[in-house]
Every structure is written in C-alpha cells, then in structure tokens.
Image (cartoon, rainbow, N blue to C red; front, side):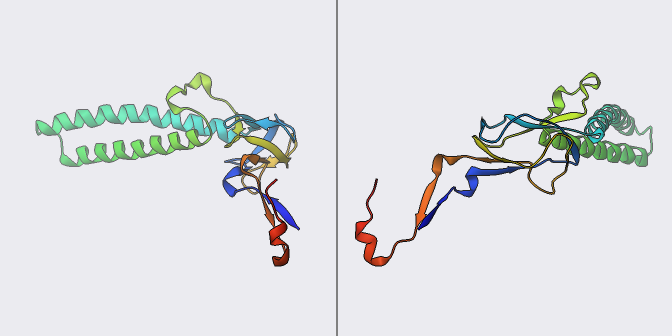
Length: 178
C-alpha cells in the first residue's frame, strides 16, 4: 500500500488578505493556472479607504517635507525655536512611516502605490495564484464573505509528485522501477 504526496512548497492555499466579499470566481476545479493569474475577485470599501488613506498620507508628506526644509533653513539662520524644527522633523518622520506602511499594504494587495492616483482608486482586488499549478479545490462562491479564516482556493503543482509505498521486507527485492 502507499499514497501520493506533493512537497508542501507545491501546494498553495490561497486566502484573502482582508475581509471582503467574493465578487467573481475566475477559475474552476481542474483549471491549469500560472503564478500571478487572478483566481478570485473580491470587493470591499476598505480597499478604497486604504488607497485614499495612502494618497492622503503621501500628500501630507509632501507638505511636511516642505515645512521641514523651511524650518531647517530658519533654524540655520537662528530665526525659529529649536522646538519648531523638532516638531517638523517628527511630523515628517511619522508621515514617512505612514506612507511606507500604506505602500506595503497596497503591494500586498497587488496595487502599485507608485502608479496610484485618485482617479484609479477601486473597490475590488484580484486574488492571484502564488504558484503554477492546477486548481484542486474551490471553497467559495460569489457572495461568500472571506477574510483570512480559511483558504478560498487550493492550487497544487504536481510536477514533483512522489509515491510513498509501504513494502514488506521480504518483498523488497521484487520492487522495481517502472
């Protein structure tokens, strides 16, 4: 007796990175998919809110940078209080952290923060396959609420499939390749 086995790196349980509603299932069980291919489209207002928050933080960072430069110049000429420069420095650093954190979330969701504009804000995301393989199981339907509690789709790459066989010791000489 025995069983077929696939290495863990060849199995992907794909889940949503945030709570959302499944808008569209783009694949069926048995479909061959490529790494990066969208499997499911999800929708939620939090997707648009995150993009808006990122654009807002990026705009405030531009202002904070200009203010920091102004306060630095004034401090160099001993025109302003050191406290004002320190506040401008702190505000700039906090906004830089906000922008970078927002950018990382957007990248996780497959949105390029460098190309994001107010006109490009959307409420849907495509959830992509992290590996090449075959869709083995789909655990959601249109309208399902998802959010990290379980996989939506399982993708399996059978290219390194192997067999684990249990053989009695006295029968080992009868086992042959092929």
